[in-house]
Image 1 (cartoon, rainbow, N blue to C red):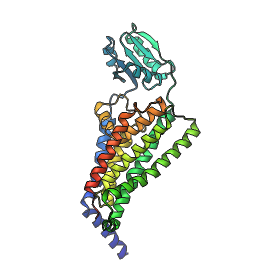
Image 2 (image 1 turned 90 degrees about the horizontal axis):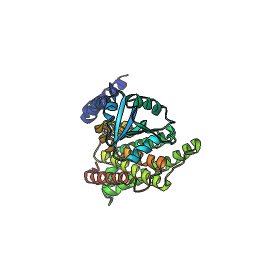
Image 3 (image 1 turned 180 degrees about the horizontal axis):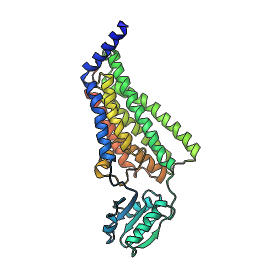
Image 4 (image 1 turned 30 degrees about the horizontal axis):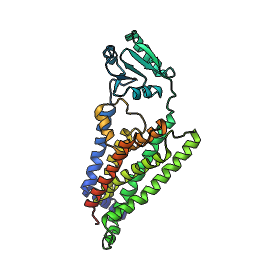
Length: 327
């Protein structure tokens, strides 16, 4: 028993003396709770989403309604498309409003609009709703890739450093960027192949077909996975402690899990929430994949997402190479 207590005491001392790991274990849950409260705690939850384009005299009265969120659009056709696919519940512009007769929430919102502004002219938009599995599939695949990319390379590099593997590699002609590139390419292949297999299985089970070019899906998935692997390499480039690495990867993965549109749409969310989401590479990969699968988007339609992912890869790899430590 003395040996058991001695080992327990030694492990406790090791943890307490690792100031970085101890700090993250205390700060991480506090940070997560604060973020979730700020993002999702709402005394006036949104039940209906009403799109708006341009000016409408009746819009002021409708915008004052509780539980109705007014979302402004700069493109009328884009707003109509969202109504047709049940992504928003209605649209108002000028002296007209648009609803989808097949939308249950659209039907209720129409009664509200008619009671407040009966003079508005009704316009009907027909379109099939996006099936939940079609909307959810890209997000779930993206989440799985995120965990595989971040933790798959983060823990490996830290373990190499802790066990002395990197110190032995340091005496070889291998450059830091070559080692990082090898980790990226190796993990990239495994991550993308698994994502393709999951997509094929679910597509066959639920009869899902991509409206856009499948090669665009592969390209976006490659870039999205490489971006997240690059972030994992940047985190692990100087980290020695497993506990610290775990804390850093958690604080990166949790915001992406909640703010990258995996479980629910961020349509009509607060501007600062949307800003944070747009800073995350997983958001861009998910949005691009959904645009290709659901709307048949082309290369130029998702070009801004692809450019962001490329920039993330280059910046993170450059920083990781510059700050990389072998010991």
